[in-house]
Length: 238
Image (cartoon, rainbow, N blue to C red):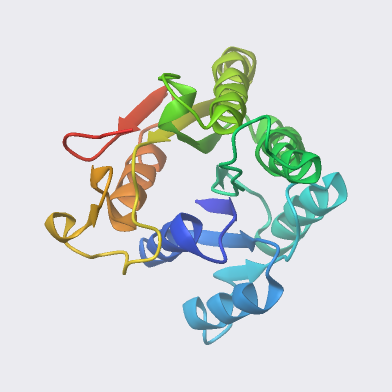
């Protein structure tokens, strides 16, 4: 498959991109940090065999999303799907959060998810097939506690996926939501799970386990939609 991975310069997005390329997929790398993105592209496709291209950009900007899709189609001939791992974070209580930080959070996680999806949909619709996967946080599903902004943003992405699933099915496009509990973003992506612990939240997932779930979704035959996978470490604590 030919896939666009948004938020692929580090963290979960980087691991997903690595795993997809390793599995034989062609990948468009998109993220804001151009130096890291180009370094990853050089590493994953050192012979420049058109397996990977990088398109630096911000999912919160419509023009960047359109450019990533257009350049992906120009390089690979077509695109088959999207993995959106781009995300920001504001943990402050709502009454203390900076308004500019809130705007940036919403721009990346809500507007960005919408823009990058809108940008790729016409390409997938034209081919009559495609897969879109958005990575989301557990508080979009179980809204039991702060941070309030995180719960609100993740709930918005959930709404996007759950509604789009029905709309996109009419032209052959599959929409999935990967909802995650605690993930160790700074440890090596293959660190054994029993060695990953947060002092307050307990066990954590490694990024390789998240990538496994993405590959599982992408490998399903046409006509099989994975509505949602909820992936949490054993004994997940909020």
